[in-house]
Length: 313
Image 1 (cartoon, rainbow, N blue to C red):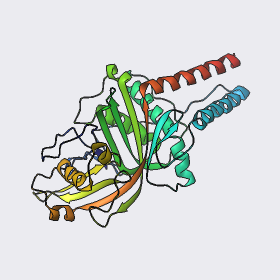
Image 2: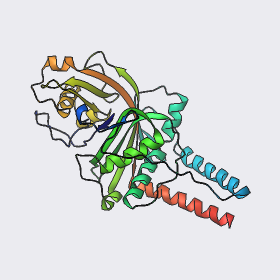
Image 3: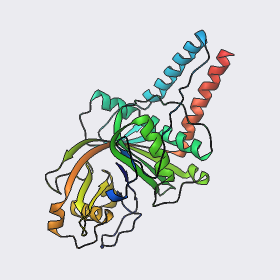
Image 4: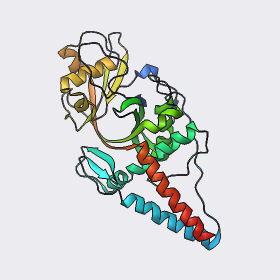
C-alpha cells in the first residue's frame, strides 16, 4: 500500500497540524487503485528498463567485464556497514535498528548510494524527456521502501511516497522516485529548475513487528505505523519513518498524537484513544545524496566510459 510522508520543520503540538508537516499517510479510503499488491499512488506507471549491452564478440565480453569491475569499484568505495550513521564514499547512510545484519542486508546497505544515484537518473530523465536509464547493478530483491525528495540548504520537503508492500527494488525505486517527485498531492510537481537543489533519500524498511502497546517502540530506532478508527468510525492508517520523532524533538506520546492528527483524527485525543490504536514498529536503512554528489558520480562514470571507448576504437 502506498503511503506518503513529509516534514523537516518542527511542529508546535497545539492541536493544529498543517498538512505539509510531519511524515504521514493518507487514509486507506483515499488510496489509489491496487495493482499486484501495490496501491498505485497518483497513477504512477511501471516500465521495463532495457539492459545495457556492449559491442559483440571478444570486445563485448571485455567491455562487460571492465564495466562490472568499474561498478564494483564504485560500490566498494562506499562499502562499510554500520548500525548508526556512516559515510559511503561521502554519502550519508543511516541505520535505524538491526545491529546484527544478514549478508543480504549488508550487501543491500552497501548498494544504497547506487539506489540514490538511480533515483536521480530516473527523475532527471523523466523531466528532460530522455530514455530511461539502463538496468541498475544493485540487488533486485523485494523490500518495502520510501523515496523522499528535499530541496535547498534547509532541506525542505518536496515529496515523499513509498510502499509497505515488498517491491522489487528496480521497479519500486523507479516508480516511487517519479511518484514522490511529481505526484505527491500535497506539493506541486518538481520542475527542471529545481533539480539542481534537490537531495534524495532512499529508505528500505524491514523488521516489522506488532507492538504490545502504543509505547512499545524506541525513539530514533523504530518507525511506526498505526491503524485506528476516526470519530466517524472509518479505519485510518498513518506512519512516521524512524528519524521523524527525533528530528521534530517529540517524545513518544507527542509522536502518537501528531500521527493521529496526520491520519485525520479530529476528536479529542485521550489515553483511551491512544490505547485503542494498533501499532506496528519497524526499522529502516536510509541513504541520502545531493544533486551535486549525483553529478560528481555521473562525471566519473562518463569519464570511465569515455576511456573504455578509446580502448575499443
